[in-house]
Amino acid sequence: MTIRELWPYLQKTEKPIYLYGMGNGADTILDKLQSLGVQAAGVFASDAFVRHQNFRGYTVCSYAEAKARHPQMIVLIAFGSSLTEVMDNMRRIAAEQETYAPALPLFGGDFFTLAYAKANQDALRQTYALLADEISRRTFCDLIRYKISGDFSYLTDCEIPQQEVFDLLDLQPGSSYADLGAYNGDTIAQFVQLCPLYDRIYAMEPDRKTFRKLIANTASLPRTTLWNTCSGAEPAFVSFSTKGGRNSAVGTGNTIAQWTLDDLTQGAPIHYLKLDVEGQEANALLGARQTIRQYKPRMLVSAYHRSEDLFRLPLLIHQMRPDYRIYLRHHPYIPEWDTNFYFI
Image (tube, rainbow, N blue to C red; front, side, top):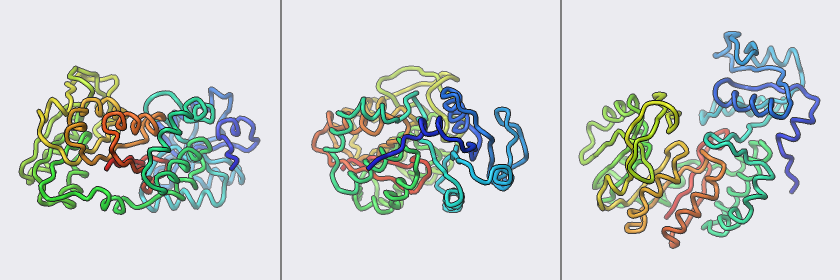
């Protein structure tokens, strides 16, 4: 199968290029286009967000206004959503225009290009060989095709509802759960629903504002321990950018404490471990290696923050416990921001 690489194609096209959406994703796309010597024709937003504001020198318009100027265009989706109505709107636009959802590294500077895939082909092949079932292998290939091409139909082809992975997790009464990147407690609520007769819950959330929500949302849950700290490979103090939401991450900002899961739990058994720590998954795994080696917890590990996550994370865990069965699933989201490895 021939895959058209997105960025070189955008350098050659004669169609006007519009960005759909504003914010960090649009900034990254505009910077990338600029580095390639490509000038975008404009930026449009969903009707509810159009106030004809200025974004990076562009007056933000509606899709209808963009289409009136350029009936045929290339649309680059510059934000992410799992909302059915938003994804349906993306697909409606794609039915009228040539539309892509560029795969953007949320952390790290490496775009997953064809050259990047070739440079890491040995690690990609090793990862493919470790995957436990045909769905994982098909998802892996579709994700690579998507990342290179920006064609989000590959995501649609491999997406499955998250509920379908709960049978894989097979959480038993008496399980203990560690949630690294607990956010406001949404995944804790999910765990309690799946395993109401749990033993203990441990959760780490570094963002102070979000941590207050986490405290409030878990106040009724017994045997729950919360830490307002980063998860990493070793105890340290790190700079943290507090944004009061899912975009908070290690970077520039206030200095906060970082701890390892192994240090905080001090050998307590963990049966289910979730890591969604905004690009720090590899470091957090290193900080949980004793727990992983001793207890082999079932794990959900986010696979989309960095380009290398698709191969680095499973290979790292395989080194710790080569007896894991490794599954890869993409849940409904455009772009690929709800793609997880499940270790069983």
